[in-house]
View 1 (tube, rainbow, N blue to C red):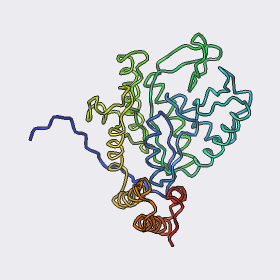
View 2: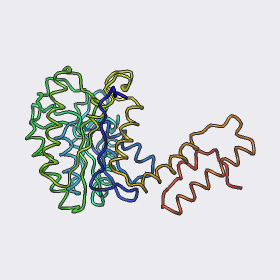
View 3: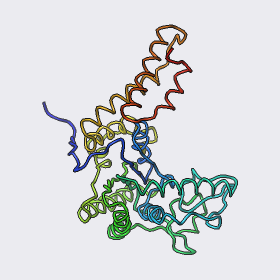
Length: 329
């Protein structure tokens, strides 16, 4: 039968990702989608300790600061706009009306991530755009402009060489600290259309070529084709959300399955299936929760959680609390 799509087939990576090994994810909002699925399935994952960061220069800055381990943020690095205190290095998720609250959240995330990096086995970086904004006052590339006036910035597109050199330098430093780390680089399929479709494609092209260079020059770097899966394999607006920019849940699930085939061993996939059955049971909402049948169902779910906790060292404390307060008796 003739195929009416371009099918990408996952090639197994040279390494496997296991639940017990720490995995740090940094980058665009697509990172959040993959990170959420990893965390839900009980992987030891830390997602975006600086919040969503789109451009490679800011991602490199984040990693470099975490690598130092002793460069926490200071109050003087924050600024106020529209009633909120912000950091040029962080997403608006950290911004609060109170300066001290903003700094506290940033500091807590920084210290946790700096320690986490030192035991990280896998680092997943998702690049969103090669277009950056520099502060005219000092030339600094910002991770987020936080709706500050446009005249404060000048825009620039990073070249392939600039991206490769900036990320390559910090990745080599991390490799010294964590000699067995494996790095996965990817380009986010989310389109940045503020400057138009043509400019978005040129930006993405720079990212794709930079990823190629990193994989060629650094043997511990592997490419994950999230961008190509959505643009060339799925290739239809059915797989976008209502804004026609973000990938839909169906598309993200498909890319997740591709990720699983590429990076998970047979045993890891089998464990994921067991975890997913428990998660499906937790999400189930009974029409008649006060029946013996439902209590038996809950006891079965709790027993499954307990078995996975004892056998695999996983933690289902949050899920246990969602089962309506039933015990096993």
